[in-house]
Image (cartoon, rainbow, N blue to C red; front, side):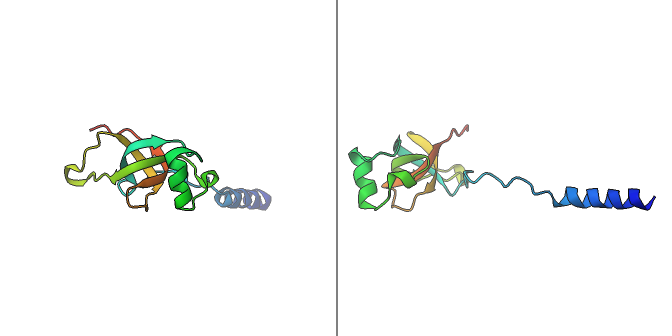
Amino acid sequence: MQFKFLTTVALATLAVAVPTDPPPTNQCNAPNNLECCNSVQAPTNSGLIGTLLGLLNISVGDITGLVGLTCNPISLIGGGNSCNAQTVCCQNNHFGGLISIGCTPIIIDV
């Protein structure tokens, strides 16, 4: 009888102690990371993107996702800005709208 009780308690403790999967790290923090970019491309060492990344001292190998050029923030509150170009969610858009990195295209149905 006591063995069954101890076994049940041990199994219950083990079930509670099992770790769960962490949430994905690539989720969009909308509306903070929503951008409307005139151009979205894969990161490369050549062309305009390569030049801009070089000037900002950003290695292409460090970038996961796409690179957006000439981006403006999108506000979803109060009607917000409409985007006539490519809507993306970018992880790093601290370059004055010139370039945003770590972007993922998204579709906003209104």
